[in-house]
Image (cartoon, rainbow, N blue to C red; front, side):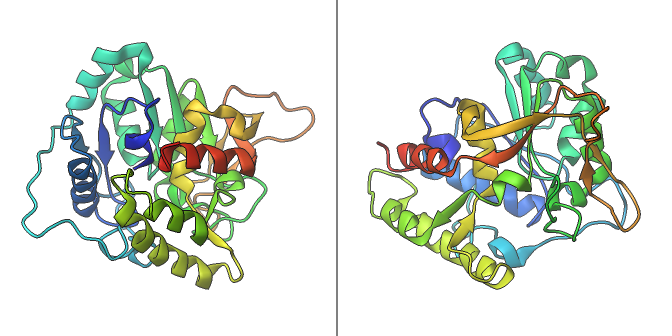
Amino acid sequence: MYAILDPSIELVGIVTSYGNITKEQATANAAYLLHLANRNDIPIIPGASMPVQEGDMRIYPEIHGKEGLGPIQPPENFQYQIYPFDTLRVIIEKYKNELIIVDTGRSTTLATVFNLYPDHIKMVHSFYVMGGAFFVPGNASALAEANFYGDPTSSNVVVKNAHNLTITPLNVTQHAVLSEEMVNSISKNMKNIYASLMEPIFKYYYEFYKKSVPGILGAPIHDLLTVMVVNKPTIVDYIHYDATVIESSEAKGMSFIDYRPTSKKGKTKIAVNLHYDEFLEEFKRVMLLQ
């Protein structure tokens, strides 16, 4: 919703995959949100339906609901168009160094693009990945964040090979909290095409967090922050280290860096501190159409 409403972002494609819900449901949801915005010009490209590790598939319907939008569902018999996977190659060829890829889910699909189109991926301007937890607890396990936990092998392909890479881990995304009051104010703004959806979606998500993080005053919108930092990088502070994701054992999905004083700094930007007031102001600017 944020990416569609922000006039400074030109959204040129949406890639859907498995995660908290199935790929099929995620695809229908994306199509529905585009339909409400009358943006059927944006191609929807279905990606991976499961991680590369056979038998490691796990869905989390309790977080965002069985349909992924809380109680909201696309209309019955809702029709929409999808595009073949090779559309990704076409988009890269069209935009080249202007293209920014933002990956807010499991990295299975993005890793596949690296493997299928290695020459094309070099044309892309930069990459933003939501995932990992550095020096803080995980949320899928005590050590691992959900995206890196969901397919650590693919996450490693991305963090080891992506150029101009920025990672937004739980260090910052868990603090990108929206309050009930803020969401209610957006729901009353009839200039926002998504106003009627915001409150019921948020309430479902907030109920999950009330149980998992007792005392929390809102719900963290992890994906949102990752999109925001593309145009507003100063919302967070960074360290520069190359990351690794553990692929097996009890530490599966754990992300780490070599933080020893003698270690070499890397090229990857890892966000470690959120400027909450700036985050909130940027969110209000877009969602309240200020």
